[in-house]
Image (cartoon, rainbow, N blue to C red):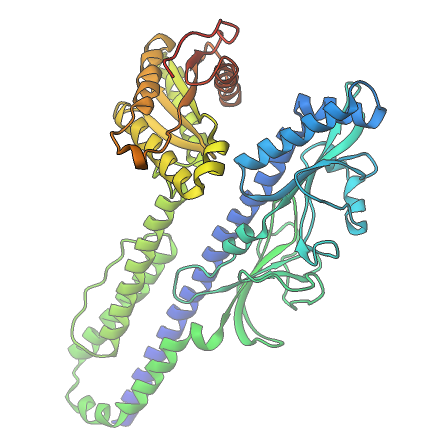
Length: 526
């Protein structure tokens, strides 16, 4: 009688091991795919921003004046410093911004900076004049800690390189990206350079990045990801790991490791339970019939089918639970895992497109929505208007009342925007204190009163005791319409941005339509 029990137990363990191993491999592969995409997006964002800022007329004119000694040099240096400070005030992702000449000598910066020897080879890379360059992490003797740089060349009228605009990102944002992902098992992430040396480990930057090697098998080109394997690694022991090639400008690899004991914990527990109940099972097996055996196999088949559905990306898998034995426990565990994966996916999807402070959609979702609305506008032959709002003198507001009050004010304005647009309109936090609104099927003539309504609503001051009264900001708004002001997303944003800056130039607290930037300023009742 013991033979059927042993055979059944062995079969169940083998099936459980197959299902669990498949789940672990799928989980690690999914985490690697999502996390590598986030890191690549972060790196590409750095190059897109430095590319855009290096093309500024202020930057080009300032570098040309400072390197050639033409014109008012001191004014050029002052204008360049003010421009860098203004950009840095809008983007808290960076520690500092600075501009160098073609040899790396610093011409202007937002703080005391030094061009170090390890960074000189970045200047000669051809990508610096095209898409921008992101360096690997290096220990900076000047800062006394690890850092990285992103740069793009500054070119004169003859397309000759006259200098570089350089960003020094705040590594805390990159560290947060490498924090452990939500899931079971929870992998540990490693950011590696092209030779497999460790640059970051689960949110921690080594004191000397690039000196310790993680001996993992890297994917062979043209493969983007290697297989998920189990192996013993120095200082880590037995782990399940995978490696994926990063497609961003920094290159290198992302690795994910899970301790084998954590990955297969449920299997070990099942073995222990089987051992504990073994003697009892020898008695119970006397009562098992052919139909009971078939019913015993049914949950395993359901688990196998559920695991396959889960591996295909179906997160709404829920299996029926019958009884209270080990298979029922495993089924409940499977259902709990499926529910957690479904909840995590919904949370991630929501967080990925929402700005935490204002609860408006974020800039990434703005880009997707703008492209979709422009396609629909073209298909239905209807206009699409865009409002670009900027809080006036917001830096001075933050300096005077602090960033906490600044966040409160930004949230107040965001709430006012949401109350004064239609249900079919969409509002976004475009960046810093800039907000954007997309108005489908709305011409510029129709968008103008909407913008004025928002501007006036922001100006309304709540009644407060004089002793506690604090100033409120006003907003300047630029209005542009697709397709008359721009045939593409970038062109439409640039048109709205130009109108916004015209509103600033005309005295702030006003609305300017694209195409009317040169119109004389009118009274706003500020």
